[in-house]
Image (cartoon, rainbow, N blue to C red; front, side, top):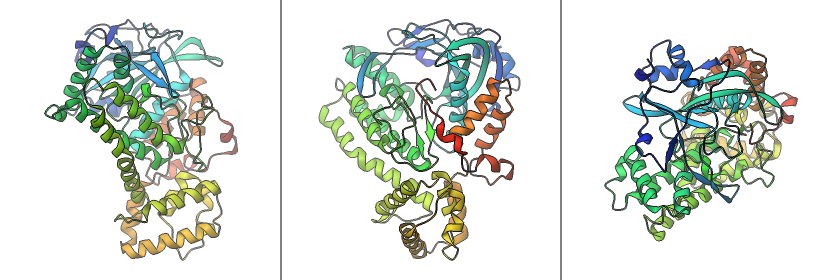
Length: 483
């Protein structure tokens, strides 16, 4: 029975004006394309959960506790206040257990809601495959993220840039609350509701903040800290989100809403993965600045509950918080044990020459872990798609001296660097191959890629083809907000 697997979400207790109950729109010819048995097992669900829940995770049946929920939020999109937005195609279907805690389960593509505006409430197979893979790839990299439980496909046609097939993705998170949930209440002057939502968020997700002199301020400081850690992790693996609007910023510090995201192939610090972003606002190198800008927006929404000076103090400290988190991640990638004043320059120079030469981001770091100064650098880094010049050789010499200074056993350092530098990430061309196969009715490419991405740090000969430099045609792939 579904009531054994799904419970009513805590958010349901809030009621209006925070959420509305909405029946999902049935999905014709629903068929399970992918199911995450490992995630289901972490909920304590038995084998066969797919059959038990197929109706619910496809939108063809309501959970036993009642109709799903759509939530109300707003947001700044590309730097402009967009007003009320809300869950236009997402429906909260319940909660499940995870190690003594609870996680929310949400359908993406479950049909129209009161917040759909001009949208049809559907997700398409293409974007759903990307999000399914993206969630699980990031989780395997150790980056906080929503998770993907299932992907259901349909024969129903929907129109984006072309006619596509409808799909429903079921994803999980400790919370789907966004900065925009709080922004909307502030901008509409609904300050009593804002206070209620902050109290709910603290009780559910930040209980340690309850005892603080100003709980809302303590919550904001923790959100800022988690956001700094998250942004640093993104930069460390070459991940570009693509649409860092405030309505896509997770309150609990998760990577949320996988649209036109991308991982760097050749290093380009000005990389813009979303071709709808004509100004480059959300370029790879600008992500930390944008996260801070979004935190300013979030802080403004808390002004009825905390003083401006106190909120600004948190914001003023954020750049140093982010830089410390970023350098900590980069030291791990470089196999460095102790922080030194020169580290920021060492990392900046590394990224500069990687950008200048178009070095493959993932493979360059992976090969650095095996670099031996006694070997020819050109031969060693050939697999990363660049030829070291004098500037690279000078940097490698300084790096080698730093390793000698730290006197860490080489084998231990290399093992640590293999754990910090993935061999495999979800490159756009790999996702595209899985999408094309899925659209043709073949789920085997998706399944194989999912298995490979679950072990991104392993040297597994079975997946050598997936960890190679991207083919030339990959450079022509374009992603937009409909991706």
